[in-house]
Image (tube, rainbow, N blue to C red):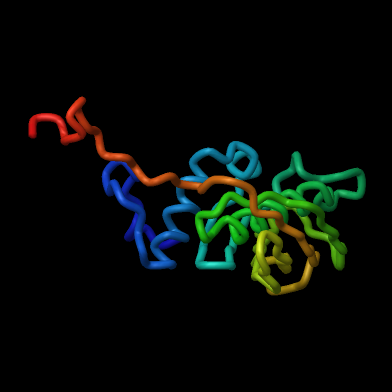
Length: 171
């Protein structure tokens, strides 16, 4: 992920007006708090308004009894990528439902790449498609998520400190 806007919100004070910079800041902030994606070993590789790309390497502990990647890990990668895409405008958004179709197995050592893109956004609801492929571009799964926007922002603007007179301290 590009890191040009990786300053913490405390350092920058106001939120960026540029949609790409805001998406990067929201993505960085979410990822820092996302123990699930970090636990998978998933990385946020790209983010832009309505889109996200994440990837992870299939490890031995992710294999099922057939020695293929358990579908739950593929689902988790797709679901996380969906979450970053639908929160990329800095509006707190949650999943309201989803489906996944598994197209081919993934194996230990495969690098899975999930690419999410916004299909529809109207009012508080959205539909996002996530395509998961391996390092060779072979399709592994297709996920469709439905989102619902709730109150709040991923990153809240920093409110300047003021004294009892409504002025910055020391002013």
